[in-house]
Length: 277
Image (cartoon, rainbow, N blue to C red):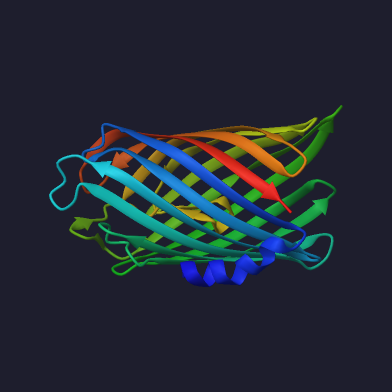
C-alpha cells in the first residue's frame, strides 16, 4: 500500500496546487503497563484539482516497551489514501482507505474503508456525515460520524467551530485473548480553528469513551484496544510564502483493556513542516 500511494502521488510533486508535509513527534506514556516513550513520523502529499483533492500519507511509529514478553519495541506503519470531490458549491463527497502493519497487535493487516459527505446549508454553515468500516482479522468495527460546522469572521480573524459525535460498534468477541465487555461506544467532540495575519491555530476536545476510532476525516485510526475517555488538542503555526510551520500537542487519557490498566496518559508533542508548490 505504501508503494502504491507514493508512486501514484510522487509525480504530482512538480505540479502546481501540490503540498508536501513532514511531521515528527515525541510520545510519552504514563501508567502504561509496557509502553514508555517513542517517536512518530509522517510523510504526506496532496494535490488539489479543479473539483477536489487527492492526498496520501505514510506514518511510522516506534514505541519503546518495558518488560514486554515478546519484544522491546512496538513498530507500526500506516498508509492512507483520501479523495474528496466537490459536486457543486454545496455538496462534497469523500472516500478514504487505511492499511495497518503492526509487529505486535492483533489488528495487524487491518484495513479501514470510509465514505462520507459535506453539505453546506448556508455560507459557512453545514453538516458532515461519515461512515467507516474497520476490517480486522478477528473482529470488525463500524463507525458513524455526524457533525455541524459554522464559519465566522471577527475583524481580521477567520474561524470555524465544529462539533458533533462519533458512534462505534464492535462486531466480534475477542481482541486476541481479551473478550470485549462493551461493544457500543459514543464520543462527542468540539474544535475551533482560525487564522489571523498569517498565523493559524486550533483547539479541540473529545469527551466520552471511544475505541478503535477513525479520526481526521479518515486519515488516522487508533487500532489498539485502548478505551480512551478524554482528549485535548492544541495547534499553533505560521504561514510563510511557500511553507507552513506548526506545533501540535495532544493529550489522551484512557484504559488499556487487555492489561486492565486504568488512567493511562498519552502525550504527543510534534512539529510539522508543509511546503506548497
